[in-house]
Image (cartoon, rainbow, N blue to C red; front, side, top):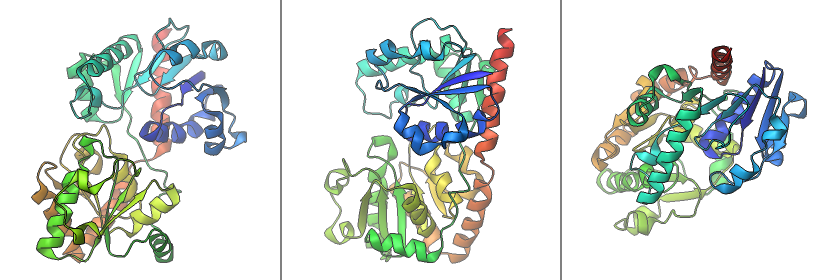
Length: 367
């Protein structure tokens, strides 16, 4: 079997591709990875045997359609596009598409009516052209079935996972070294994400304010994510100065530092309103962090019994969930054990095997 994978996406999609390719490459005749060659050199060793194809066109738009390197992968048996931006041209091989979620149609992103309709066309085109569809959770599978009118038999759920060789509890000296360098004082609470409205950062900051003023907790709140857009006064304009001084915005940090911060967090908070999977809390759990998460979308499916849940629209519930772990050391220790156990259920090797099964299913159905 010869497989080509479009590897240009960033963020969560890039995490999936980066981690499944090493497990798939050794089990197929050839694997073509299309995208940024420099990034591939950082991701995978040369002896992995991946055939890299440069494809630098931005995701979406006319350039990717004109520059899609179909001639370079003409001997493939199958194309896997891990997003809904598939080629519009007729393909000489079957297509497997991964639709991570329907966030563009769910009203959780700041999009104009025209952009929503364009996304709807992208989605519809992808599900009609694909021989098979994979998605990351049962929640997303149900969304695809109901909102895009797709036959349930055409969709397979393949969850994300964690690289447990990398994401595991850091030792105390490493936690303190990273915290000191980033000007973080222990104890601290932690969130990660962007300022997109569905990430719900504003309500977490308001909940933190409530804990600082009502309960006088000594903690800092560490906010990890790109600095652009993280401005306290625009997110939550009522934060008093003494609360603002307890919030540390780290900006983007690398995985090694992220692991140390996950490991040292007294509570990792994830208040997202909508997720197709929700990888950050799973990574935090693999590092032994107790997690407080939204009772929303796919998160209960992923976190299972390991998390403390809250209504993401309720500031007081978010605050109470955090406080329940801060105030009760026994519950916090139990949460650490539950986090580590649950995270072990998600393995990239298992996910890669499921993708291989999906590829074989597509090719078998074609014959």
